[in-house]
Length: 384
Ligand code: G3I
Image (cartoon, rainbow, N blue to C red; front, side, top):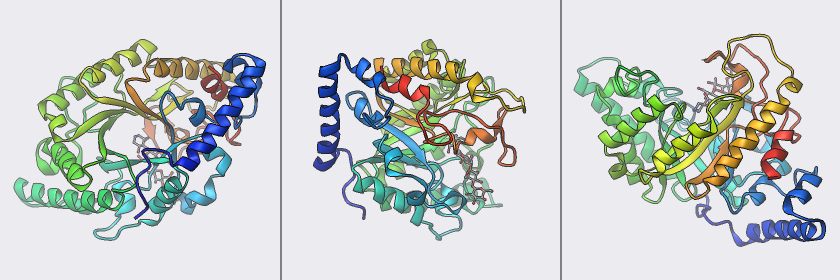
């Protein structure tokens, strides 16, 4: 429907990027090492992130498409988007957004994102098929025996995945199939038992169904399990246990999505490295899928801090994180930031671990500021 999925950048885009890269190299040859050249350049577009990281991994960004009634195309300028070579809908492909009522699909926003990406030789990640949040209640029976409730949910899951994955089978290269199915606490169930999917099924077999249905709908798509706090050793162990207990690799699991909603202090580079190694050693691909840095370190303070007070710490944090990620380029297939710029971030409404749209506390988690200008953190990531 949208032309072939963009695993390889069409020749035109390769040519354009190549020209940019060659110009950067020529400029460098005349003026010293790439670092000196890039650090000398305050023009963020002299060498976009996607070009500089071409030999490491694609750099993606979560983008708005339809939120607050704002269309994707009207919200972003080409210059800003040129920094990235992959996109993911922040909300537009979530179950409750794309199929708010049974059989009523809202394709327009996801379609506009996919059409732009295909037209510009960029890839698209699908987010998300099965999740406990932003999933409409009609997908679950409100009464009935456990078997009846399971069969109802199973039927709705199959129909949803068939429709959504099937529509974009030629244009999306990967999917977050299941999101956040693991318990945050140790000592109890491995699984998030309060998930409506777990409740409807009565067990975790909804997870294997989701991967089976996604694989059937698009056998070429790369399928990921996506979660947060994956660098927490206890949660990491529970995710490993799920993968092994459910034999998820034999249900199509290709890799792990480490959301990476990190902060200025946690996790350490050592914990990031241990996490990457854990899943790589299982033969799984690793992606950083939702990277942003909470400048309040998950605190519940309500008073806003000025960006100037955290700029240095944020800059150093991004530097050390991307140094670690570059060192693991053979284990990581993509790094996606959870947003383009600080003008729109979910973290403005995340205070002390509680997400509330009605509360705003300005945060500064991304590489571009609220005016979409590059921050020092951008140059720390680009000018390595
Ligand atoms: O678009 C509507 C707007 O029209 C309406 O006026 C407004 C007020 O209700 O709501 C707007 O939609 C909100 C949307 O964000 C746009 O900002 C939704 O209500 C709100 O639920 C939604 O929050 C999203 C959140 O997931 C939901 O849990 C965030 O944008 C999104 O960044 C966040 O992303 C999640 C990942 O999907 C999974 N990993 C964690 C990550 C952060 O929570």
